[in-house]
Amino acid sequence: MAKRIQSGLKRLRQSLRRAEHNRAVRSRIKTLSRRARAGDTEALLLAIKAIDKAAARGIIHKNTAARRKARLVRRHREALAAATAASAS
Image (cartoon, rainbow, N blue to C red):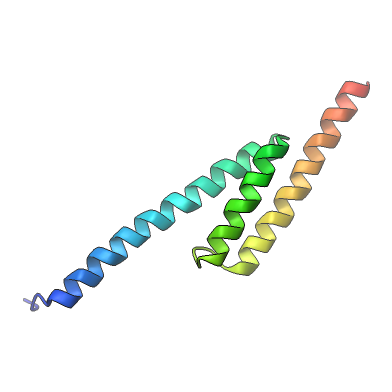
C-alpha cells in the first residue's frame, strides 16, 4: 500500500476540483453554441465570449477556440440566411 502523503492528497483534491470546473465550462460552451446556431445573435456573442475566456484560462487550446468560433459564426450566418430566405418566399 502506498504512503498517504499530504501534498499528494492535496494535489488529488485540487485536480478533481479543477476537472469538475473545466467540465462545467466546456458544457456551458456547448450549450451556448447550440443556442447561437439557432440564429440568436445575443447567444452568439455570449458563446464567443465564453470560448475566449476558456482559451485564456487554458481550459481549451487557443486554436480549438479559434476553430470553434469560426464554425459557430459560419453556422450562425447560414441560419440567418435560411431564415431570411424562408421569410422572403
